[in-house]
Image (cartoon, rainbow, N blue to C red):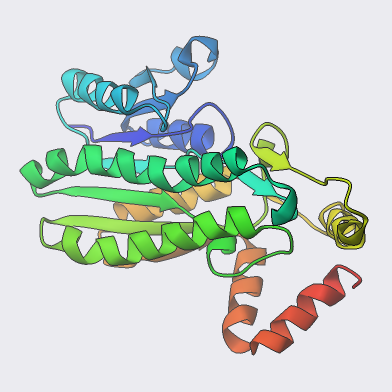
Length: 270
């Protein structure tokens, strides 16, 4: 019998690549997104069910899970992928943007997870994959909001794995580096503002991000890592995705704060 996975944020990028990868491996896929009526690729693939799910809408979360179980009988794994990044000086961000960032990346992830746990507990089986980032272990300038959410995801996931083990459920964290997705487009909220004091560091960061030497890994690479995390049947908690993830996270662990901050400033030309 084929297994079933539910993926949030499956309309593009990592979520879409993951949906396609699991479908190609013979899994049933509940591909969720805010506007499934606009999807024109996944709906053509067998054993993929499109569902509306907005992580800020509790009713849509419950309904997507209910519909998926109704069709496939059981959900074996979920991937909490929906999210976006807010970057810019904290001082200029309106409070509503701050709340939206944490509601989407943290509270939404927890709401989806809480909704699926009773099903997993009943089956004494399941895998929860939370998409974090290298930004859940280290930071770039101007990312206090985004990194705050990803550090939270890391802490939530690490603590959750203890209680989930009691009911036969595994928790996994996937930490991608720079990935070639639309993160810099519709999944990116960049606020530069007009305060002159911040413009030098804003310019330095933008120059670093646009450096042609910075190579982004394809979303399919993350999908491969997610598949390994779901299927390896191990107790491993964290999985990295991308050569830059390995380099930066290894550097963060080996260096003192001052050494790491100096390296990051040098990369920005600061």
